[in-house]
Length: 462
Image (cartoon, rainbow, N blue to C red; front, side, top):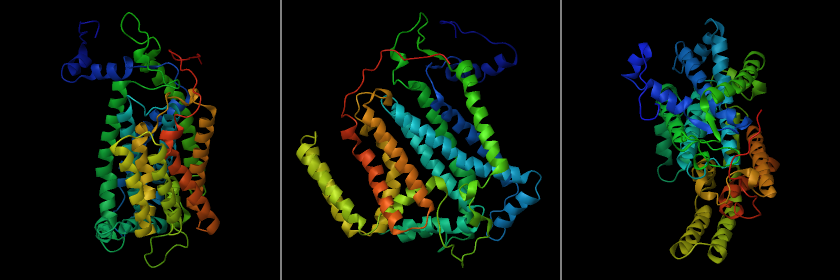
């Protein structure tokens, strides 16, 4: 487009454009999509997540060509891929490494959103789509983890599916319905294969497209949290503080892609198991329903949430019940709520406090594990800070973010270790810190002296 005139393309591109808006899409989402010109290192990870998604789909297609979703053949078919299929070992290691690297870049991508307030208005829907992608990715990884049919795959699936039996009334039937049998069996393997290969990837791709469309509709956030669309514009209505995504950021992202591929290749060729974190040693043993491994743990990217699950014991529910009562009292006495809500939320917390002592602790472990992810959906409405970016928040906010990150990493480590009284106590403290970080965010996020936000973005060429 040039003003109100349509620029006609000729040749093959023109023939396509008259039937499909190829040039229009390229302009809207690449060459004429203006992004803030102060992007930094943290903005590599969105593009890298898209790269790994494509990598996983392509390698997955080649693996499916030789994989057998059968309880008697699955493990041997993976061994066949590794030993007999030309370059099969490379494809398998690329796929297994890609699974872990997917979570690495997604965790860092979400951390950047947390730092710079990328979930704040008007990007609530962008964030919600992103968290939905994260949930979908967790389901995809969990179901794919069963497919090698090794010892840890089998027993990990058995433990996780059994968690659904803790849901009151419908739990036992629900867990049987998920497995398709009374135990993890060939039926479970088949349905997990179908979901991993077809159903979940389709949903995942749809969410990624929705995430990108929503992002390009409202525009990208930046480290300063300044809206470039609301800032000064040139004579053609383009934001002065923005630059076209293509070619500037499409080339800029190649630096991140190159660095990522170097690390990725180093892992694939020199340490594909990563000391048992990317590929557990027990998973090189065929699944045996009659022999339980001494220590069952999920893959590293699930372990923070697994730690929260194990942290909720019958004794710990007293602590959570007391916290609920204190929260109810705090809202009623000093909360900013008025009228109906001033009574409603304390009443809800008091009911939760009673239920914590009535319902089995295993159920509350499942609630804590699931709630640790679901609470991320509500982040746009939990953060009441007057500024977006961590750059302009009080210094102690940065320390709080640091404590949160360290706690998450410690929970991840604890989830890989056999349970012990000391580790369980650390997991309980970590669970309180993790949940408290979000549940108390409406209070602490608006406390302190905030720095003035500049009217335009701060930018240094590099």
